[in-house]
Image (cartoon, rainbow, N blue to C red; front, side, top):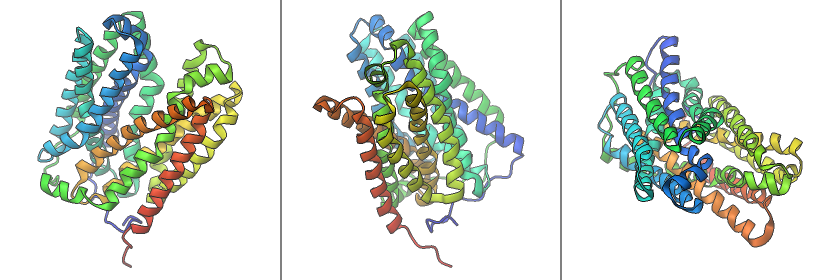
Length: 401
C-alpha cells in the first residue's frame, strides 16, 4: 500500500523481463517522437518563418497552439477513449500523432500550419497517460515509478538527441522534413507496439462517468496543481536560457546549443531519478524535488555569470524533470477509477506550467529585473508548488494498520 493510504494499481501482468524491456522501449519511442516534434519548432523558427512567409513572433504562435492542443486533447481523448482497451487506444493515438505531423509537413500556408500543430498536440497527453498506465501494469508495484520514468525518458532523449538532429535535418534540407521524420517514428512506434505489447484480456474496462466522478476529487486536483505551479520554474529559466547565455554569460550565439544539450542531460538524469525516488519515497518525493528545485533556482542567477558555472547549473535545472514521473505515478494511487483521465491530465498540468513560467519570467524581465530574474521567479513557483504539496499531504487518507 502506498503511503498515500490509497491502494495502488492492480497487480502487474506477469511477463518475461525481456518482453517488459521491449514494451518499455516501444512506449519510450513514442515519447521520443512526441518530444522531438514538440521542441523542434524552437530550433527551426527562422526556417519556418521564411517558408511560410511570416515573421518569427507569429511562428511562436505555432508553439502555443500545440500546447493548447495538449491541454484540450489530454482530458478530451482520455474520456472519448475510456471504453477502449489500452493497446488499441495507444495505437490509435500514435496514428493520430503521425497524421498530425504529416499534416504539419505538408501545410501549404500559415493558417493550415496552425491547425496542423493544434491537431498534432491533441493526442500528446493522452498517449503519455495511457503509456504510463501500461508501463505500471507490466511492472512490479515496487518498480512502478521506474517503469513510468522509462516512458517519459523518451521526452528527455528527444531534447538531447532528437531535437538537434531534427533541427539539423530541417536546416540542411527543408523544415518540412523534420515533421515528416517524426511521422515515420510515430508509425515505427505503432509497429513496435503491435509486435511487443500483447492484448490483456483481464484489463479492467473504464467507464467515462466513473472516470469523471473520481477525477473531480481534491487529491487529483491537488496533484495536478503541484505540477502546474511547481514545474513552472523549470520552463521559466529554460525559455529565456539563450538570451541569458548571450546577454549575461557573454557566450557567443553559436554556443547556445550547448546550453540546450546541458538541459537535455539534466532531463535524462531527472527522469531516471524521479522514478527511483518515487519507488522509495512515494508522494514524499515531491517535497524533495521541489526543495531541490527552489534551492538550485536561487543559485542560478549567480551561476549565470560564468560559462563554467552556468552549464552545470543548466544541467541541474533540467533535473527538475524528476517531478514528472513522480506525479504521474502518484496520480495512479489517488485517481481511483479515473486512471486514464488523471494520467493524461498530468500533461495538461505540465503544459500549463509551460505557459505560466515563461509568462511570469517575461513580466520580471520587462519590469527591468534582468534576465537572471527568471531564477528567482522560478524559485517562487517551486515554493508555491511546495505549499500545494503541503495541503495535499495533510489531506491524504491515513492508511489503516
